Length: 400
Image 1: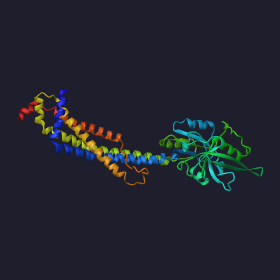
Image 2: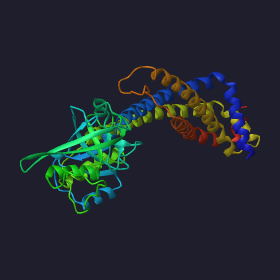
Image 3: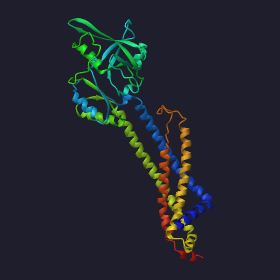
Image 4: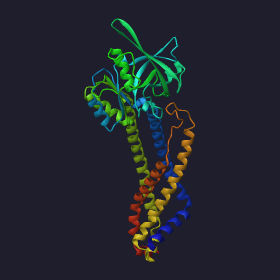
């Protein structure tokens, strides 16, 4: 379309000819857009920092039951089938979930620790060797107290009183891994489920002192006193917490913390959208009025172009092209300013951002801001474009 290309070229030439007015408009766009980009970067950075604090702690997605109950295989199958559940495993009775560990068989003192069942896929041991058979993984605090590390052997002991006599079950277990401190802050040992159930049966008096070389798998018909599950995502913690409570299962989770974070994210999003809408709408209106005034000011010149054969459609490209070019230039300048501010802000120290990044302006944010700015400017120029299309060729002759 030669007419449109001609009008677009004239619009660019006009912008270059009135460099001061063009620069003022570009600076105005950048002055409005840059703070909005920084504000969105701060919102994203704060939320990302808070989410990272929860995500990096695998226990943030953990849900455990509070009171001992009877959970059968059907209950665990139903939980495991839920799309929100990433991992679930039974727990033993609270009184049976304790054992003593020593660095060697000859050690005089032992450290009491919690006993947790584990299996492949356990988020608390993500990326670490999962114990099987006569193996154990230790929490960081227990490993430190025992002076043990992966590859060492520790002595596991539990006691019971049966028929008035005190009996002790002692097993040498190979340490497969030491869990990071974030996985479990207390003294704990992660055992394969068959070994943990064997320890529970021994304390109940239903298992012999002599442990077979190969520990048999648990009976599928067995009921368990509790469970430990991990949600697939932070958003799933709240849903699972509510679903279990509706079933009458009292649980402990970080649902309140997660719900607070999600509410903060929603509220900040609403606040940002409101501020962006008010600021952006105000400036786009002023931009549209300025473009309209520019068309009125050049009405005689534009009518002469009509007289020379330029179509009405071609004239609409004049304000639209100017608006798009000015908006794009202003968005680029705003992005540069926002990135500079981000670099300065991220050098400051904030308690909320342990990673040292409080502002997080991503390339997608800049592309989105530029696209919306150009689109808004083109829409704002529509009023001026309509006025330009209405200019008649005879107007230039009458004003001559």
